[in-house]
Length: 191
Image 1 (tube, rainbow, N blue to C red):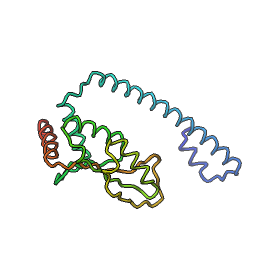
Image 2: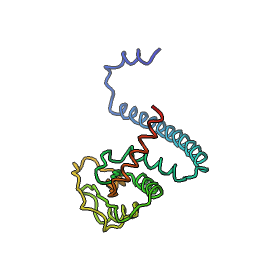
Image 3: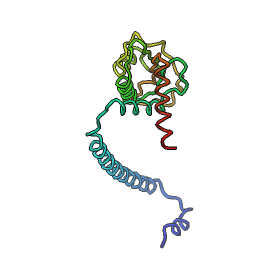
Image 4: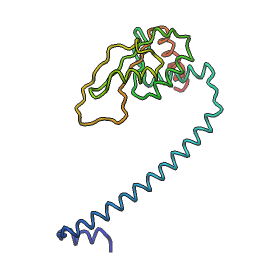
């Protein structure tokens, strides 16, 4: 007999608190077992993807053209599209910020004095600790940090390990134009 038929027959039957607790207990155990199985499968699939990535990347040489191309494509995704007076890259992911700046520095002969950082923090952040954190990530001295912007937090949601969001600015419109042009010309190849 199908479960849907039985369900229709018994849907109006009231269970005792003990019976309901027993069903809830079994349901929870089943859910936990299912979640564990799914996590294990996901872990194995992620491990396979990591091994694939390691094998593909182990022989990649970041010669200047590849560094420039990667830098411009990351900027195209996350950087400011309006380059009026500076290259402006905004993100909250420390790894992405670090990677972009590595490629940016590798691709261009930069004057480190032209860098500035603007932090966007919530009221639960400690500004001094965040300055130290982001200075370490970016390699830009704290003295080059602009006045912090405080973002309103409703208090309903707080991301664990969220370090805030930063905007890295490099005051050189010429380099900004080059970044835009390289990304544009690269993408035009695939129209």
